[in-house]
Amino acid sequence: MNQYQKVTEMYRSHPLSNSLRSLRHRPYFRSVLYGCLVLFSIYVLYNFVNHTSSVTLYSSSDPFSGDLGENYVLADETPADVWLGRAKSVKLAFLHGYHGYERYAQPHDELRPLSNDYRDNFNGWGVTMYDSLDTMLLMGLENEYNRAIPFLEKTVFTLPDGEFAPFFETVIRYLGGLLSAYSLRKDDILLKRADELAEKLDHVFATSSGLPLFGVNPNGQVVGPEIGILAEIASLQIEYTTLAKFTGKKRWWDRANTVIQALDKADLHKTGGMFPVRWNLTSAQPFDTHLSVGAQADSSHEYLLKQYLLTAKTDKANLIMYLRATTHILAELLYLSPKRHLLYVTDTTFSTNEQRGRPSHTFEHLSCFLPGLLALGVHILPLDDLTSLGIDLNEIGNESMFGRSGKSYKLLAGYNLKALHMWAAEGLAQTCWLSYADMPTGLGPDEMVMHTVGDDRWGNTVDGFKEGGGYLWMDAIEKWKGSGARGAPPGVGDKTPIIYSEAERLRGSGRARDYSIRKSGYLLRPETLESLYLLWRTTGNNKWRDRGWKIFESIERHTKTPSGYASLRTVEVLPAVKDDDMPSYFFAETLKYLYLMFIDTDPVPLDEWVFNTEAHPLPVIEWSQAEKGAFHIQ
Ligand code: DMJ
Image (cartoon, rainbow, N blue to C red; front, side):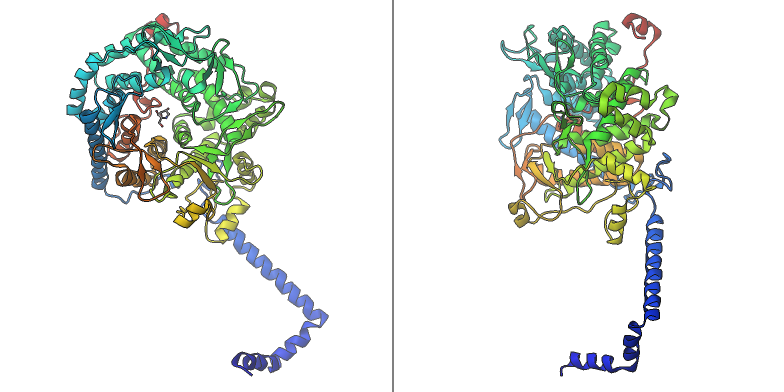
């Protein structure tokens, strides 16, 4: 008999064991035993529920009250001088890259930071310099700014026959850069060049609808198909309105207003009130039912809110279009991944006779501007009291207007929209950040494909959360297991990064990361940082800017070259593989948002300035009576 057998035998022969064994078979004992089991289960359940519901709910004890709660005021443990040191590091990064551009590429468009060559990918007029002007002014880089002026005085806005300036890119980068710099420093040359540039581009509006074509040569030639792309036809309103204000010229206001009117009159009954990607430029009507907030669509949705803000909240048509777009996005384009419950936004297409758009489950880096936009809306709009603006969600969208998609309005009308938009903002920002934190480089991929199980629409799960009084069964289970975000709305709350081992990466699968990577490059893009900036500014929660700093450290570590900063071919391997490319938006947006996140002042407050889609801040406009009369503004 071994030791184990001895012990077992000892227990078996013990008198107490014997009597228990015999009792087990008596009916009254069985009842007592089952009774105890029931009592014990009630005890466990009581504690479980009590424990779970005592977890601080994400926003407040009533998550639907609109009180955004104490989560939003967290003490910053990083000393102020450390943040200033970080801001200085960003400024040095700007100088490093910009000096490389000045030395090897100016007056061409962009520096190739590996070969020290240049390229002319945006008209060859020096786009990096134009895109950098207002960042220089915000950073106090007088020498760089003063050196830029003679270059921009000399730029000849012409192109060889048969070449065309892409209108959208030229507006957001060149025109936006000049107008923003002029807003910060009233140097007449900046406005003069902006006005001149707009004149050179003006042939682009030679369509019967007044929506712009794809491209224009300053000699008057234009190019572009009859079917235009949403972002390219509807991302000029804030630049042209600003130009009208600064120059006093009605024509520039008319250009903006024509686009606004066309969007406002469009027939959106197939797409729930949201703009699809393709448009007929003759009829100014949608051409397809592809809905996206990513490539080819992004800034058009952004400009709805921004035009409302730019016009000192007077342009209500844009606000209503923004509310329609976001209602459809929140109800139909947001999804949750199955295991980590990552909130993401994807694109959908309605096939013939389909009542609901079919999602691609692609999640683009470009879409990561959306959390920032939603947070900005929450910060500035009375979303919890739209009636104060005379707006009723059920009236701006319903089933008689939009068919089945009209149901989204009714659904969202049952929520406190301020809380709902903020949850979406936080959840999406969390996923955007995690796409960086999951990578060995600490930098996020350009495109992911999210894993799915069934219909994981966020709208459905949020409804369960609402019905459950503020927490989800799945969150409670996560809590019990000691992980996950308990008490937080679905998709909201911090998640633990999962960095794949090299073996997992090569296998193409690994622990439950919940997505695969389709485009693994990091193109020095700004969208995630833009949202971190806006989340931090609007909530005051320092975790967002801490993450901004982590991303900046990764940029320094993995993208820096002797003459600048380079896009990465892939974010998935170390050492990082660089590309010979340094986009101008790196100076306009990426470094600007980082800098604004770390300094201890706010030179461009969100209620006084509106960032164009290339991060060029433009001041809020109050029309005078004379301007209203001259421009025929209601
Ligand atoms: C920028 O040029 C602008 O933000 C644009 O709206 C889309 N994306 C690029 C940078 O990624």
